[in-house]
Every structure is written in C-alpha cells, then in structure tokens.
Image (cartoon, rainbow, N blue to C red; front, side, top):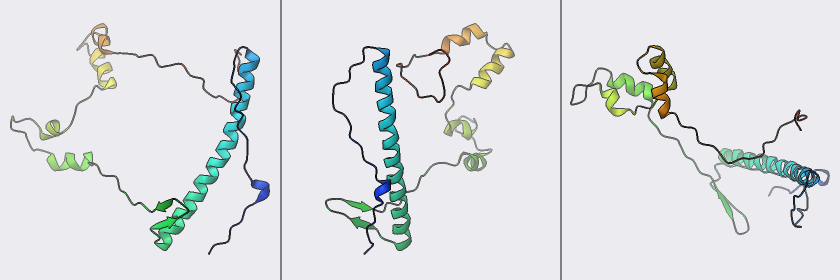
Length: 157
C-alpha cells in the first residue's frame, strides 16, 4: 500500500465568506473584485493540484492495467474512448470522378455548403453581386455584457 504524505507548508485552505454582497460604490466594487481575485487564485492552485493528481494516477493505472480504483463511496474507472469522423481529404480522393444520379459530382452531394466570407468578398469585387444587397444577409447579435480580466493598469479607469 502506498504511504500517504502531506506537505503542511503546501496545504491549500481558505474560508469563503457568506455575508451578503452589496455593491453600492466603486470602493464596494473594487473590494468585491479583490475578494474574487483572492478566491480565484486559491481555487486555481487547488484545481492545478487535482489535475496533477488525476494525471499521475491515470498514468499509473494505464501502466499497471488497473481498470477500477475504489474509494469510500466512489470509484474511478479507466475509460478508453476514441473520436470517430470522416477524413475529408481521403473521401475526396475516393469519390473523385463519381457522379450522383443527376450527373453532378458526388462530392457536392455528400458535403454541405456554407457561406464563405472570402468568396463573398471575391463575388463583390468581381461585381457578381452588389455589396449593399449581400450585406442584408449579414447579421450581428449583441451579447450580454460581462466583466473580463486584464493584466496591468487601465488607461481609462
């Protein structure tokens, strides 16, 4: 049985406050974001540790061909999956020269066509369609506002 070791000086622990969060001023907003940064930093360290623990146990289990590791009330099972999909370059070679029942290339029959921004620009440049007309098909949908983290000092803050 492997011995359990725990480095006390590397221990990760923290208490998450449960008091009400009230933001009524810039000072409140700054304090809340600072608290969030502190908690996020501690969580990131804990998550990095869990990733390393799981990675090392997985490597060991694969090497030793251990399928299941049982703990109190839970277990970990080794799962082996693969991604499956079509290789478009290989398929293109295979169907080259083949036709559908209407005599059109089989490649066009077995693939989907989507709008290509570069080809739209080319069509406009070649005057195949006026830009004003095709722009009616261009849509922009606003997203919900959010705060994003940046490093450094805000110039307009």
